[in-house]
Length: 235
Image 1: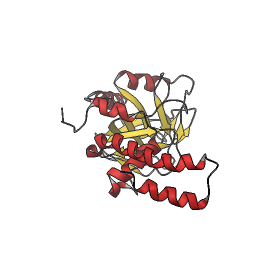
Image 2: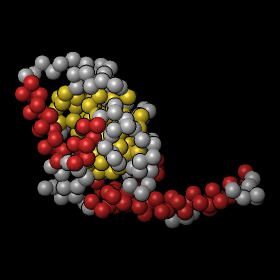
Image 3: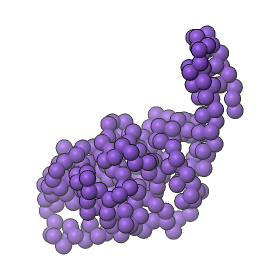
Image 4: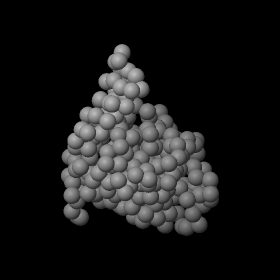
């Protein structure tokens, strides 16, 4: 197993914050990543009430608009190989699955069966530009952030896995750290994982100065100017 500069507990701790907050912290600890590394188009969450997910990326590609052209045994072997790949992880995972069809989401890979299978092999959820279904029967606690909702699985099949993929503008490679919630997803550089909690604490103290003023009767634009200056001086 590879070595990581963080633990499973570090990843679990990041689930305490929503994905926008993680992005805010990354602007501080990894400023070169400010303009990329996150989804940039709307995604549909299977649930708006589930907490964020955070884990090691397990990447793959699918198609669904037409049959694979492979023998049934080959398709089955690809599916089993995919499950084995997702299961071979030292920590909880987040699946990042790119639908390669010209119209992504023609067929849903995710529904009752696959959410339960992936939960059983250690995945917390999935980020995909493809579609999802069976919204009332998804495995408990398993989050799906998807491009669409669709009633059929059509000809959905695994194409490849373990390579770099791109979902709604977010490039992601195998073993990247992915954080996602109903807002979208972001890739966290490995060396930034353990720096994020302190950055969030600092940002929270800076924001409190502004928010407290907004809630007070003494709010004026002049006072806001002063508060912004004070916030910048907090370290």
